[in-house]
Image 1 (tube, helix red, strand yellow):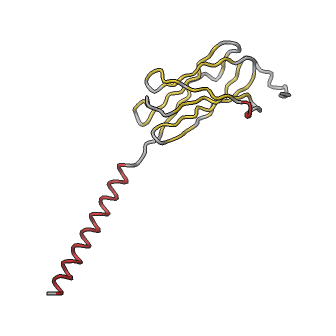
Image 2 (cartoon, one colour; image 1 turned 180 degrees about the vertical axis):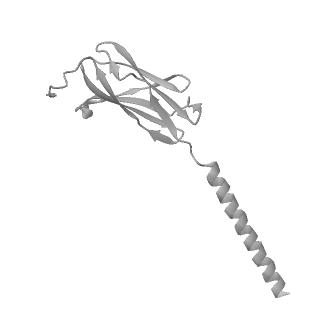
Image 3 (cartoon, helix red, strand yellow; image 1 turned 180 degrees about the horizontal axis):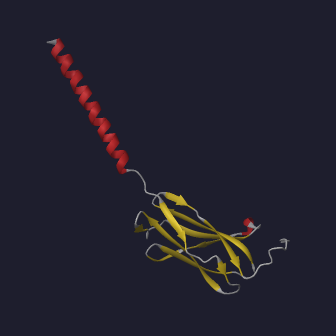
Length: 141
């Protein structure tokens, strides 16, 4: 009788272990995140003294992300990162977030599109040439 109970208990433990392994495998597949993709849509060449649109399209898989927690554009002149500005983006349509900005002088600038959506964060960077900067001059500011 004791051998029968031991065999039954052992069989039950093996079957429970297999079921738990299968459940863990299924849960892992369900919680795998798809990457958030941010495509900067701002042209690389921009005018001085005119309002321009900083824009980024946010997607996950084939779908536009219209519910990003935050999209901010960080803009700074080359060599002056500590003097950069953060400009909050606003959803306009189909995963596209925009902010208006005016560059007040010629220069080479950089922009991060800081994006937090669906528990993920990404921050693609783009170089912006504004006006006709003298690339041979040293920045003295």
